[in-house]
Image (tube, rainbow, N blue to C red; front, side):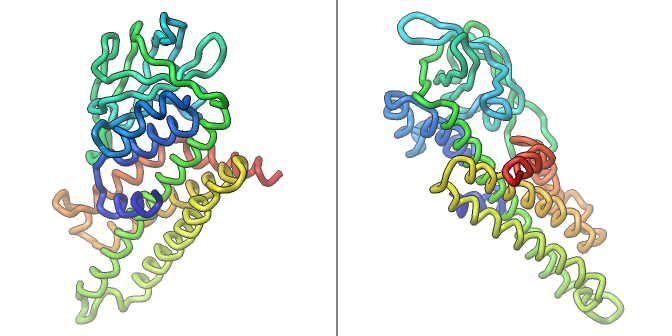
Length: 294
């Protein structure tokens, strides 16, 4: 997953891999019931159907209310903003709060009582939507240990997003290095100037640190939930900083062309700034790291 997300970040891919496989799929896999997994995961895995996760951050702190329906169903009410690919997904995997605690539900995106509104975002390459439920009847998919399951699903999502950010940072670095070697000023390549060398070196250091943290977090999936969560938070903090820093520095290195609409750099900057706000800010994850160390 980390390898795929890194390459998607490098190319600013808009395929619903993060939303369908990582967010919805992992949430269902880790926190869903065996029956729900057998019914929905095969279609999600082979791409027959796409899915989106409707959840707040943390995942368990949902703004969607659930009440018991007939025949093992849940009736959903409430709204959630900034749902990744929520406007186009075939299935919605919903984290909700019911009388007995946190619930997981599966509902078709076109079901009665579901209203999906595309949202305009800074990042043109990632679809976000507002999803509202008004008495929508969904299939109950709550697993036996949904709390721990959501923690692991959340850590997996954070790690995947961090991997994407590393890919974006790497792309900005590669473009900047190539430009610095070919753009000439005062009779020499601008990459020969110390100021440009220092900028490129700082970009490389930030990217390498983030990449190392992402690889560690990806391997932490086999360790305890607490270790996985802490490793994911570390990767997230470093990757956020690397992606934003690399995009900002790359625009500066490219000079006038870096500010133009026609050059792709502004898309990397938009992706970096938007991704900073998904699944918790760096300050939130820094608190997670601090709690793990104390």
